Image (cartoon, rainbow, N blue to C red; front, side, top):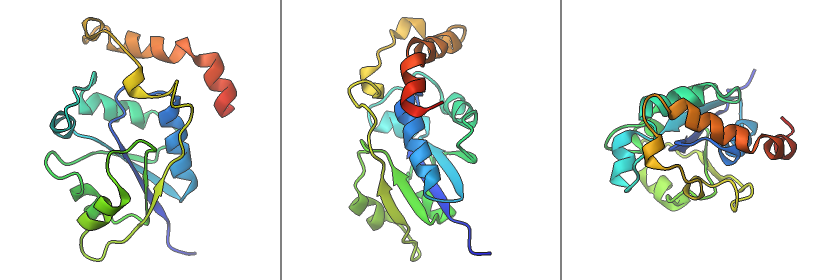
Length: 165
């Protein structure tokens, strides 16, 4: 039996939508095991993002997705540290990732040279976290699940037909 192909996918995964599901399905199709690295709160803030959900909550949500085999929260300071530790065969980045393939290659250590694949977008006009607006006032510990549930249910029929789920 040959070496297992580990694929790493990286993202914030704050408000999970069909674009994320599509991305992760594409990543999983590239190998045997899909490891998702959820951006740490510190890294999100460093990029000027203030997630609705904490890194712990985002990790837990991604863990609930059947397509994912393992979920890790990224390093607080160095976004490449976890990737260098995992040494994946393939890194799948989102279609809208702010990091280029060249920057990834420049930051890999110890001869770690995985194949880098950029996922294809799914209806960016509709499934894009920056276009999903949730009023901050509705996001508190009691309402987080309700807000997420509302987002999922609001597009469930179109989502099912697009992804055959």
